[in-house]
Image 1 (cartoon, rainbow, N blue to C red):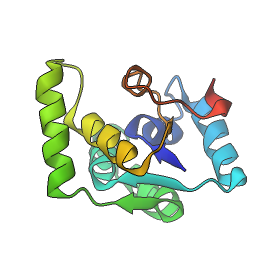
Image 2 (image 1 turned 90 degrees about the vertical axis):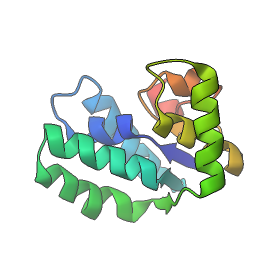
Image 3 (image 1 turned 180 degrees about the vertical axis):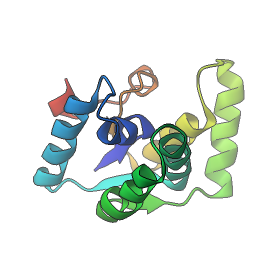
Image 4 (image 1 turned 45 degrees about the vertical axis):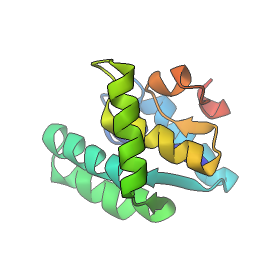
Length: 134
């Protein structure tokens, strides 16, 4: 099972993103592999906000109609949110986001190591990128 991060979603959508070609290649390799994909509702919100502000509503439609149907969206509960908020505040790092901390907590709860992301915070937290991205 592989976690899907906002950085990957955005890179898939934006043809001008520096990671676009790598993102497309990895996305299709993940789909072809039959690997189960999951994300959180926090990542969905973050991805939609970023895509809408930078690319427009067509990108939000692509997220909704093309990307989300092939992954499980885990809804963040109060316990996961609280754990992530505590981790964020303890880290005292301005560039680390609450959404990232929620992602880390959700991945750990599922015992996952693989994240499709272009965010180095995942590596710093001990997670791995899919082999197609290495």
